[in-house]
Length: 272
Image 1: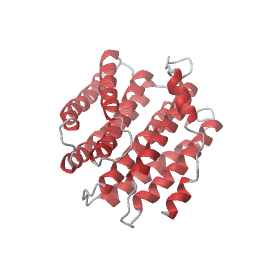
Image 2: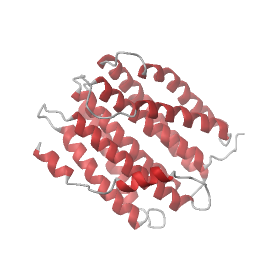
Image 3: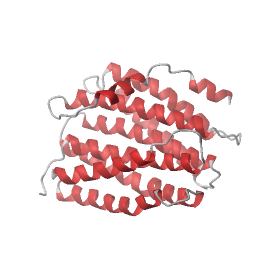
């Protein structure tokens, strides 16, 4: 159907694919480096698979958008087996980084934005932007862990700069948005999350030669939970009456709890 419209569920599914592909990359490094911190690799990989399946089932997309999703899924089918090959090593991490960061993520982001536009819902772009922040949080962690593992990437500084600029650009758009679409409460929560991003930026740009992979993984998890809560609030605000987006109670409680006990991580990072 050349004229079909994407649904909000299609947008949610693509957003989850973008976020969890980067999260899987971050978790591969955690396992490979033997960092004493829990990973979510199997869960993240299964999430990407599941959301591709859900988009396929929906049948809402125009031929053009469906073709883009199909191409992205074909890329994922080529990338995914690398996550399971033992042992987890630097060579594979770099290959995964090249495949996911240089190609998959850029296309995933573009499709998510195109799907958001295709829904025709005012404010859906803000849903995509919040989801993109979730993805960027995992991306920054994956890049940092790549360096901490001792993997040479000549483009490291440029990639960190690019990610930070994207984060800043997204923040500008969301904070300037009318409160009909991004509420005061959401903006306040975004400001709390921004402190974590600043801390991460300081760590990522440090030239001390000392790395804190466990701390990076911890901040990435905090941001993942915080931004999921913000995403759920944004979805509820923009899509009310449009979509039945259900948040499991346990997940909602976990997300709400992630805002408790936030400390001055940025200050702490400056001291390290």
